[in-house]
Image (tube, rainbow, N blue to C red; front, side, top):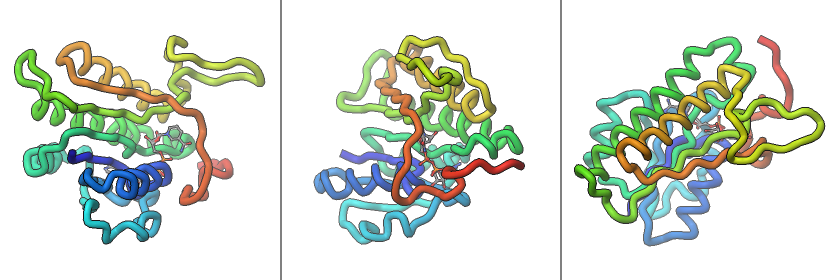
Length: 203
Ligand SMILES: NC(=O)c1ccc[n+]([C@@H]2O[C@H](COP(=O)([O-])OP(=O)(O)OC[C@H]3O[C@@H](n4cnc5c(N)ncnc54)[C@H](O)[C@@H]3O)[C@@H](O)[C@H]2O)c1
């Protein structure tokens, strides 16, 4: 099985890459990351020489590059984490978030569709896993909780761009039968996290 993980040099992605490389020696893991300010290969230095691991430097919004990558490696699954992920930055540069999070996701979906869907036939065992955020549901007060059926109500350019990407993932499932999975986790913290997430910065 060949798995493309995007954003694997970032905070959560580096943990996902490490887990897959170490736990599934029979799978080949391709880590696609453009190494923005948030990406750091030091986060995955310990597994960089593993036999089942390959790093690919590239941009998910580059359609020709992504198309060639899918053709060359014929992935069976995609775990999509690459994103602009910091809310404060989305207020100072919304278009970058729309480009990376919306267009980048659409580009990956389109290439997965080309590779896995043939008319009404879906290649068995394929899956596009999109890592999203609970912020698509809006803001919670001191009380309450979201569920998967909570209406979308994004409040920042970041969460609106993630909500848009969720809608595209769902649309590719309903329109083309693409096998997809979306998770909407709340805030994570831990090792290899970029320090900006631990405090609020005003731009
Ligand atoms: N951190 C959290 O608490 C949290 C919570 C909910 C959801 N998420 C989601 O999880 C995913 C990972 O979050 P994170 O905190 O690890 O992010 P991060 O900012 O630490 O890492 C993002 C990674 O994506 C890469 N990247 C950015 N633009 C790219 C592009 N155009 N092409 C290729 N690579 C690109 C960066 O270089 C970086 O390595 C994101 O999709 C985010 O929306 C994060």
